[in-house]
Image (cartoon, rainbow, N blue to C red; front, side, top):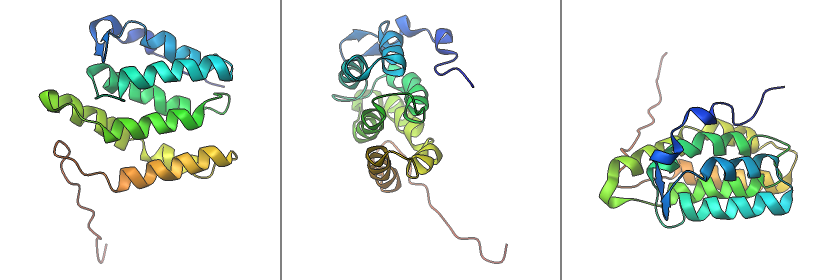
Length: 157
């Protein structure tokens, strides 16, 4: 059995920012979501929502998204539907002054589509519903910062 949030200590969180300033407290909140009970995890997730994506996306959002995908896919996490909704929120928000940050944050969410596909088949009905909503959002995502990816069928190959 692997350890969740592995490698989080290699991120220089104190050098990153979120909606209200320094992102130094983000790893603590991610840990509370990972190992806290429903109340603790929910409170930490609420903070992360405000910091990472409710108002806009930030440089810390880009670093946090892979850990959010990991939390969403970990059965022992009590607030998985909320984590999935936060990923969806991140995909919906922008950062026009820092378009490269917006593009990277969106790309980090879009790159997790395979995880969302697995979550659609989860045992928890609430997780399945949240994952279906996120997949729909990913598949229909269009914004000024993200280049349109064309899906072409290869015929004869």
